[in-house]
Figure 1 (tube, helix red, strand yellow):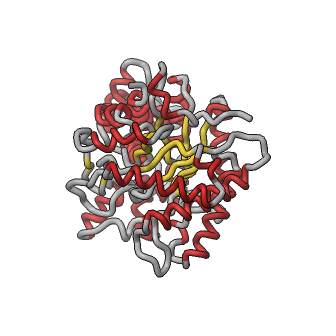
Figure 2 (tube, rainbow, N blue to C red; figure 1 turned 45 degrees about the horizontal axis):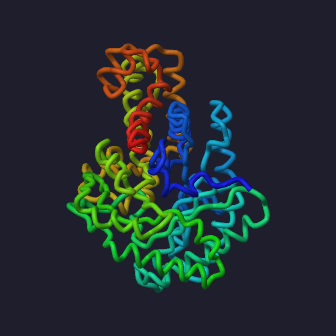
Figure 3 (cartoon, rainbow, N blue to C red; figure 1 turned 90 degrees about the vertical axis):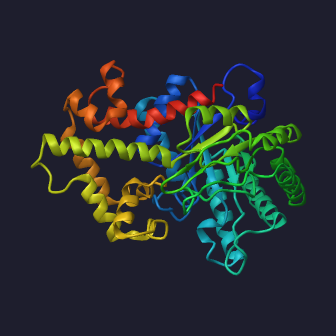
Length: 426
């Protein structure tokens, strides 16, 4: 049986090579393509994760099941000739979250069906997140309840992969799990996970896995989600302060074979990312930060197209996305607050980047296709790139990036990915 690439991640720092791995949490095809291209340059595997709300047995907001997502990622890899054996698929926040409006028994039954689908579809990194309360329960659950539900899901996943002869999954546990997609309000500071809480979380989960008959699965728990003190809201970012996380990092000496997984690392500086990895936060999850960079590129190309071809389109891409988000506000309305103008600003330029939920929408997708078709084959003048896509200007000037629409979009995402891959080489 082939061994899971992540099984010994806690020992990577003891040998030459990467000390951590970026976790690409996105279903956008351009983001995934950019990640594969960056991994190819780095001669590294690529870890791509889907979340429970994004991809599940009911389709999620992407309309994809786990099996669909596996095929989707594989097709991108085949098109750009990226080796499939270097793709690691992860499932993020796997638990009752999409169905927490239901009673716990019903929500957990749905979660069991979901993790079965993920395991059977070849996802080999499974983050068990059962920390949220369901209907009639408190918002935050006791560690013992969370651990018991996580162990229940692990046992189900083990049954799903048993005897198939493939790669056995590794697991991520944790009870201090940030909200997917960033905080709901502006933040000034965050409480770092207490060292004793991290140790207790692991102890309680070990006992729960043994009680559930899933001790074998616990032997493949390679990481725990904790709060190192990083997060982002709609308009601000909480930067990593390694001094505040020093005691938490030191607990890894007692958690043999495990690393910490850091969520919401989007928009951290390159130095902060390097410090996170050096301090044992070896799995760096990033998602909205990548689609934020992509949106910047698409909007820059939108303005370039409007200048070069002023009469070619009825509406710009930005006008289409504004209309779509106003027509269907469910994915942003409860997250963006303030006046009408403040909400309009957040719809397009929030760090939480909830516009990412709308790129698969038929109208938004058609507008992107129209934009890219309009610019297809166009050598965009360097002066317009300097004006509207300044982040890629130097790379265009030195010949690293072609002055064309798709390469420029990929380059914007790659600029973020470079920082993550570099941080993981410390």
